Image (cartoon, rainbow, N blue to C red):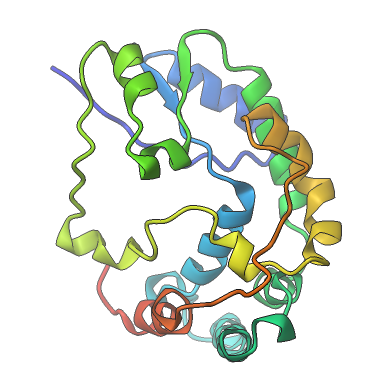
Length: 220
């Protein structure tokens, strides 16, 4: 029998890293799928307001709704005038403190501990349809055909890479680079490339409309 297990790794401590590595040892093939952290943070910010993640009734629910509305207003403002809102401002309004400071440090540590039994296959390679490395690792041809079940269709947003070049402003480099650079280098991204689109365009379908759709989705 073949078993495929997907794990979302967000290690918060060294103990988490040890547990992840011990659990992974039971599998014959292990694939680590990194994504450019700049694109990752955009997706995390927008997806955090999926309705099923809202706290129960009470003060926490009220804060969740207030934060959602603040972020939605900023996203709509940025869609109209991209230079009017930095992604750092969006991120602070959505998450508060720099929660990712220790996260990406831990992720860098995790990557350094992956041995030769692991395959590092980037999200961007998947988007490009370049499955050669993965096929060679698994020992059979991996098809680029992808199907998303209806009950997970809410997850689909852009299916593109380097969205951050439209979402980020030049000043965002100063805010995010210190946290991201070591991890980016560890998984094969160029930590010196922070070029943004000089004429950014933000599609509301991938921003404010996506936010509204997730927030209004009452399915689980």
